[in-house]
Length: 146
Image 1 (tube, rainbow, N blue to C red):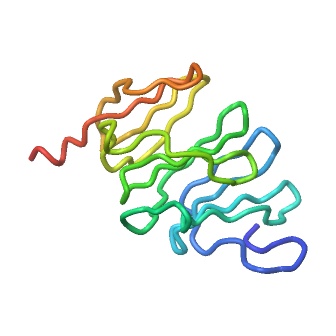
Image 2 (tube, one colour):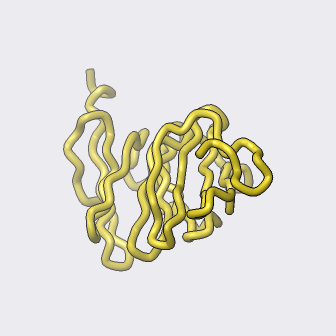
């Protein structure tokens, strides 16, 4: 599924990572356009998130995504050292953790039940933030100390 099922427009150019949501939507990081695309079960684009309205200091660079049992979408933004939280329809809600909380260049995300881990370059994650019974974890980027 690379083209919209209704109007045949291109959905994404270079899918880097993807996740499925509780409502059956497919959420895709497009590494070429640096966007997150939400596609419904029928193959129709529901939303595109580009973070242009979020006052970031650097260009948005989504790497990995995860979804929770509420349908919320978590996006690791490598360049801005932040995790974006979107609702199930791809609308921005808030930044969860950032470099202010010790998050540096989040490379990956892992959501298992209620444990949410941010993976940084083969490092060991540690819990740094808890919100609504979800533990957010981040590791230390070991490459910075070489």
